[in-house]
Image (cartoon, rainbow, N blue to C red; front, side):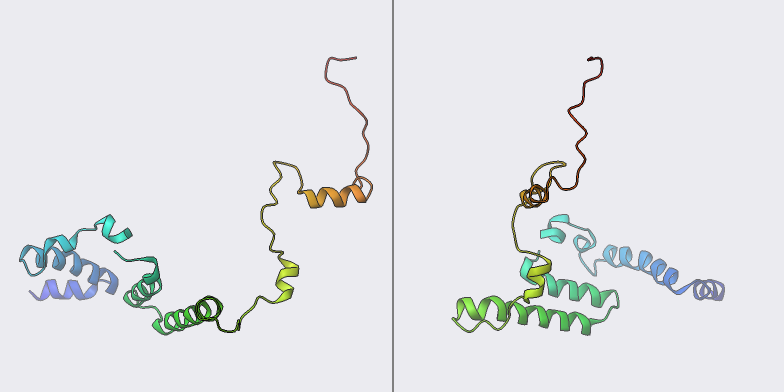
Length: 151
């Protein structure tokens, strides 16, 4: 028996725990200590159990399981909830003052226009207007051109 124990202790820690789990989990289900239904991955339950509002807390739980920093997740959840409350709930629902606003330099760098799609290879209308004002945008007039085979 000592040989098996020595062998088990000699393998790397992750492999040791993975091996132990692959033996223990099915054994626990077979002995009836937990329902075997809990050992299956039900895609509906995994993809749809919780609602979107619980997603930050689910991510916090997953991060706790894999050994990540729960403190960082808690601070992120707190900041996110505080932002949502101060930006939307307090001013809109409770009629309070708007404490947060987007800095103006961000509007200068990243304008809040919608659309702007003009087609493949065609610049947006604002760029075309600027090019027309600059006398054609610095392009060379190559002439009318001819199709191949035409004289």
